[in-house]
Structure formats: structure tokens, C-alpha cells
Image 1: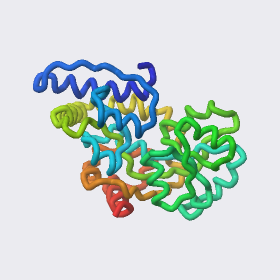
Image 2: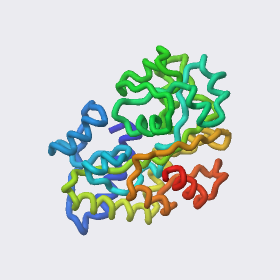
Image 3: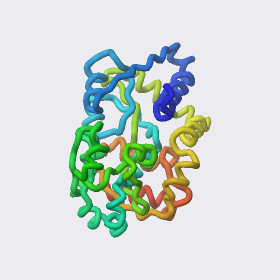
Length: 274
């Protein structure tokens, strides 16, 4: 498991299980590697015994069908989005200053992704495609911009030499990533919740987060403080997820760009999601 993204989630899972070993007993982690859409892999979790835990962005539908562990694994970082665009779209993208301007810029997203529903709910111009074809669709001008998490965009530039990351916009919405287990697996959900809470208190969670998902190199690339933020509503948030907003230690706030205090950010998010 050399992929740093997978390493991060696997290490969180391992630490949470280790911290609860005395109370819940021994465990064995056995990675299951397979290629699948988000929808299909979640269906496998729901209907089979092939996997016991899945990490993914949440939605009301996913929380209804499965049991979520309500600790944001990326501290909300998945909701900070930049645009992957073609070089020829740079000048047009620079003219976007608010959501009205963004509506005139066509965007691509994956079929079945919660992000797609968020963009569509904000009346943006969205073209849907299979996850493995979206970069090709961008290159072929099926749409002008591909919103990607700040942890994703720069490592995808190798797909085509004409791609670049737009310099000046930051889309932001509440998009927690949770561990999910089967609906009836309450014991595992409770164990993971307790374990994650323990490693948060011990500082191990943030240690892993800033090493694997938010290193200094990411801040240097994103330049949060120089970007114009466009806040988007996420209508698929459940009440349980909204309730987490008051626990500011669970969320990520880029220190270089924090023009709002954490409390003000909280209030802002609550307003845009009413």
C-alpha cells in the first residue's frame, strides 16, 4: 500500500483499532484492492462480506444505507476545491469572481459522486462522466474545468501537458469523509469512533493528517491566501453532520488564509447550508 492516500486512511484505521484493543480485542487488517466506481464499492460494503470498512465522502443517502463513523477523516479538506483547466481557459477563468461568473464556466464531475449533486444544487453548469474518463473529457473540451480537491489537482497534471491548475479560485463546501461500515455493525462503528477520538486527543490524528494529507508542500502549491473563495451549499448534509460543525477541532482551517475566525467560519457554513 504505497499510495500515500491509502496509507493515510490505513494508518488512521490501524491506530484507532490499536487504541481500542484492550476493550474490544484483537483484530486483523486485510486490504482489499479492486477497481470499482464509488457507488459499486459502497454496494459491495452494504451487500457482501468482502469488505468491512470503506472511507468515502458522505451524503444523506450513504448515511441512510450504511453506518457512518462521525469523525471527519480529512477535517473537511475534501471540500476545498481548485479547478483543473486547459491552458487556453486561463484568461476566461481569471474573470470569475463569484458564483454568478462560475455558472458561465462549464464543469465536469463524476457520475454518482456527492460532489456532482453539490455542484448541480448550486445551479452550476455540470457535465457528468465516468470517473476514469473525466480527464480525457477535459482535454477534449467536453467541459472547461474539473474541480479537484487541493490534495488531488497538482498530481493529476501529468495526464496532459496542456493542463494546469487555475490560479485564483477556491471553491468551498462542507464535505466530510467518513469511515463507513455495514448498517448493523454497530460494534465496529463504536470502536472506530472511540479509537479516533483517542488518537485525536493524543495528537496522533493531526500528526498523520499533516504528514500525509496537508503537508507544507500542499500549502505552497495552493496559496490559500491568494485565492477568491466561492462558498457552495451542500444540501445533502444530515443533521448529524451539521452538528459536528460546532466542534472546531475536527475541522481544517488553513492558517495562512484564515480571514474568518473558526467561529465565524462555523456560522458561515451553517448559514449557507440552511
